Length: 77
Figure 1 (cartoon, rainbow, N blue to C red):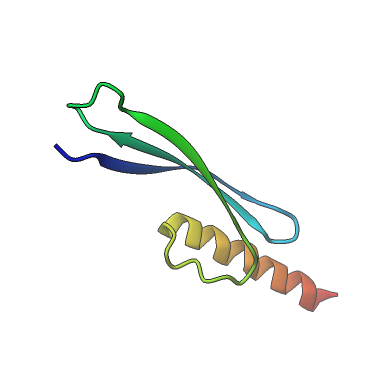
Figure 2: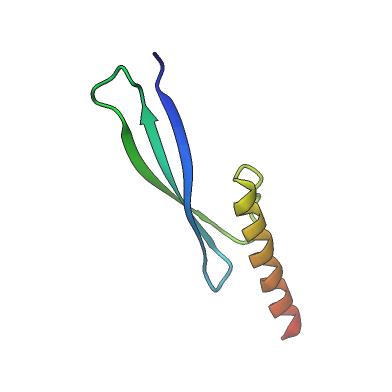
């Protein structure tokens, strides 16, 4: 049997300068392997206005909202 990989979004944090921190939990499992499952955590940092189309829709929505607010604050000054 093949190893299955499941990725779950754990959290997405927005820093004051607009950077995002996206934390995923990766689960690797094979019911026929006694050493599995293995769970690991991965962290990705994303700079403002980076292409986020490869990320989940929720992360894309958070990025769009956070980065729109940064632009409004800069224009307001």
